[in-house]
Amino acid sequence: MPFIQSRRGADLGSTFPKIARAASALGVEAVMDAELVVWNEQRLDFTALQHRARRRGPTAERAARQQPAHLIVFDLLELSGTVLLDQPLYERRAALEDLFATHRLSAPWALCPQTADIETARTWLAPAWGAAGIEGIIIKDPASRYRPGQRGGGWLKLRARTTEDGIIAGVSGPVRSPHPLLLGRYNTAGRLRFVGRTTPLSAAARHELGTVLVPGGPGHPWAEVRISAGWDSKEDLQYNTVQPDTVAEYRADTAAARGRHRHPVRYLRIRSDLTPAGIEPLRSD
Image 1 (cartoon, rainbow, N blue to C red):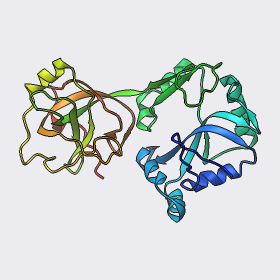
Image 2: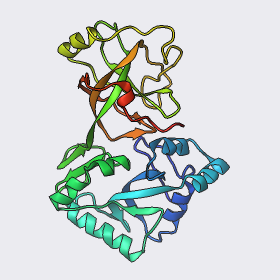
Image 3: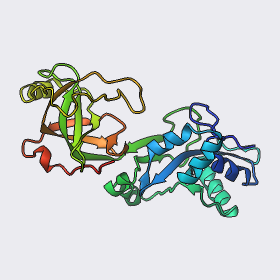
Image 4: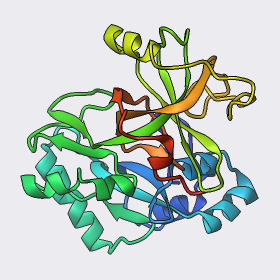
C-alpha cells in the first residue's frame, strides 16, 4: 500500500486518492521526496491545495476531479529495497530520471526540472515564473547526500522576489509610531482588499511614517474588517486603521494567492509620486 506522508508526518493517502492510486500502479517500491501541488488558472494554487488537504472519503474523490493534484518529484531516496540516502545527488538524480523513463510516468507524476546551467537557473527566478507560483530555486551540491529533516548539507534555497506597491490602510501599534504596516489594494469592484503586512520597521521608517499617516475614521473601508494574524490562522490581527491615501513600495517573495502574500513583506519607501488610484486593481472575487 502506498504511503503519502506530509512533512509533519500526516498520512495523506485518503486525501489525495488519485495520487495514491498512481503510486499503487507504479509497480516498484520507491521512496521519493516530492511536493503536492494544485494547478489553477495558469498558476500553482496554495489555497486550493489547503482545501484539498481537509477532504476525506467521497468529498476527497470529488475534489480530486474538480481540482486535480500533481506530485512533483525532487529526489529518490530508496528504490526496490536499496536505500539511496548516502549516494551523491547526481547518482540519485540519474536513478530518478531512469525511473520516470522506464515507467513512462506522466500526470499526476511530474519530474522537477534540474539544471547545471546558471543562465537557465536565472530564468527560473524571473517574474513570469513567480506569476505562476514558483517561489524560487534550490541550489544543491551534486555530490551532496540526503539528510532527512536537516537543512543545509550543500543545499541553499534562493527565493524569487518582486517589488510592488500597496496602500497603507492599517498599522500594528500606534499610528504615530507604527510597527508592521497593513497593506491593501482595491479590486475591480472598488473594495479595498488586504494583501499583506510588513516585517518590523526600522526606527527611521517608523518616524517618517508616523509624520505622514493619519488615523482612519468610522467610514474606513476596514472599519469592520477582521484580518487573520497569519496565513490560514484563526487568530485575528490587532491593528489600527489609517487613511488609505499613502502608497508604499515593498519587496516580497512570489508566494501569494488571490493577491495576498503568504509571508511578511519588506517595506522599502513611501511612493509620494503615486496615489492609490495609480495602482492596478486586483481582480474581483
